[in-house]
Image (cartoon, rainbow, N blue to C red; front, side):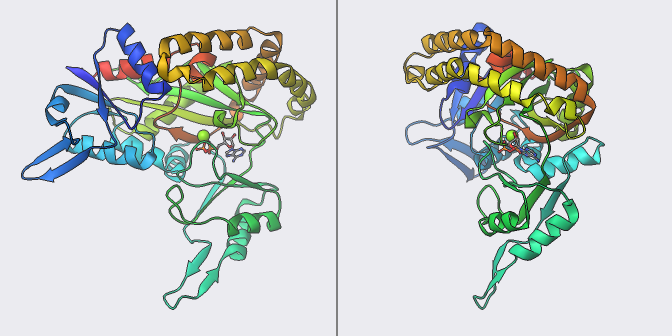
Amino acid sequence: MSIGLLCEYFEADEMGIKLTADSMNLDVKYIPFRKISIKLGENALRVKSKEFDHTEQLKEIRVVLNRAQSKNRRLIAASFLEAIDKPSINPLNVEFTCFSKFRTLLKLFKNGIKVPKTLFIPCDVLEVTSDRRMIHNEEYIADLIMQELSDDAIIIKPDAGTHGRDIRLAKNREELINILSETTPSLVNPLGVLAQSFIQKWFYDLRIVVFKEKGKPPYCCPKAMARAGFRDFRTNTALGNFVFDVDLPQYIQDLASKCGSVIAGNADVWFVALDAMIDFSNMPEILSESNHIETELNRLETLFEEFKRVKRDPLKKKNFVEWNKRLETAFKNYKSSEAYNNVRAVINESVEKGKSSILFHEANACPEFWEQTRLATGYNPAEFLLACAKSLL
Ligand SMILES: Nc1ncnc2c1ncn2[C@@H]1O[C@H](COP(=O)(O)OP(=O)(O)O)[C@@H](O)[C@H]1O
Ligand SMILES: [Mg+2]
């Protein structure tokens, strides 16, 4: 029996999973999730492309890694896999929760995990009545947000967004009204408004990998990745931010494992990457180090740019193994520099000091990991994912 790898395209993560599976002697079979049809009818479910019937091949597959990149497609894939009784990582309930930031936060909050103060307002900013009149709700919604969050700075984000896209920061009522007036229903924000207190996370947030193999307790990777930079309040790696390795205090590891369990419910096997921020607003002594850190980050620019240049190199598609070696070398050069180690030390010290002020804000069911998390932490999440799958073989 083999492991299925379902995706639209083979990107670095999927190629990395394949490479890792080869090194673990695991048989991984590709399941295309693009130009195929899933047919239900005539007492059967069939999966076909124009050239090939994948239905029989699916029978040989014991468990599927659902790596569809679009959240909506991933949800459909998970629903389909559940319908054919094929275990998937992640299972449908996990995808369903992670799809929505608000659903995720509700679960965490209800189970006593600290999350940023968050508001969901089901009303759309611009409403069109049946007789085609426009109702502008910007001001009402802005006032409601300011009344309920009473913070200096407020974040507006799409409920199902990714990569920091369309996340906006408002520092006053006027800015908030402007941002709201540009908030329209979309695939990643089907309705309403999601608002959150701005967390003084200093210059970084944390990406923490947690997972559970069948028959074992949840496991939190003891190293996290800090995503860091002063240029933008959004610290996503997709926006070019620096990355560092962080030794997670046991307290955070335990909390992260709990977050995973809360999100996964009674699923036997799951794998998620959590996003978390430490609220440093009550620790001015830490925030006062910013100038020094900015200087160190400037010193790191050249080495990190070189790493990013390799990351973009089209060699990735032609010769993944060779490209990967070059990527690892570029990262090693960056990581072994003095400035990296200086910043790393400061982040680690601040995580230890601020650990009890950690807030979890998102769970990613299909995180990117090959190009950053793996290199920063030194742990290969593909091994974790495959161990999860193997536990179901
Ligand atoms: N409430 C907040 N306070 C401060 N920064 C935030 C807040 N919410 C998000 N961010 C920043 O924006 C980034 C992206 O937000 P996130 O909620 O993780 O959405 P995405 O799915 O786009 O990654 C975070 O990694 C963090 O750096
Ligand atoms: Mg995120």
